[in-house]
Length: 280
Image (spheres, rainbow, N blue to C red):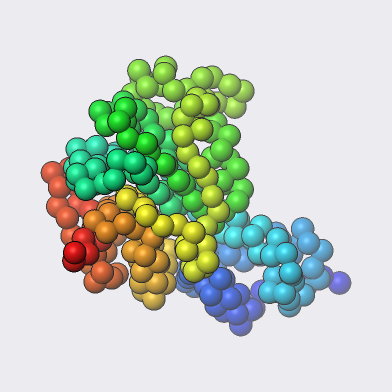
């Protein structure tokens, strides 16, 4: 007989385990949301109790079940041109400063984490093509990462609802989207401009693969972390950045409350954070 009940002790054990693995902390207010998805996975895997399922989750060599559950528990809600004043800041302020000291033989590297379903990196790609004169003179690498493998697959397909693209200028819609069954698909050229990768910001080995990043968009991710995890993530991203590089956070987030490593940079369009130039 199956027992899918999850006790308070079970929830606490799971929340602590998931926090160690991902840096994401579930408060008691999230109990219903988490329980519902745990119960769903227990049924799908044929587990007869939370204890049995939790054992699988912890010790499965492939890590497949942990990844499936992570995909269910991470929230992915975004749309095109969200908080686009930061994209304007990218074009008008951050990029001109970056290229003033950048080796022209090396690409400018822009990293979006989390990528979610792709709206943010694709918005940046369109902004660069439409608004930045330097696009003809500089090679740009646009990397987008997420912990959720399912959402990465969705992002790579690049198919979106009318609601998702509602803020895209009409001329850009005509240029960069085509109607397909299920919605509007981003053009192949834009999709090819973004490299999607799975990265867990709490795993040192994952973040170590990212180096020489000039600009990071990390918007509305750190709000899901506690203070300790935010600080660790900020340090990992600092190591990934080139000296003088910039990071953009969500409008409710402040690096000043997270890490002393960065300095505030106030540009006309936005407040961002900079890794200071190292002394020569």
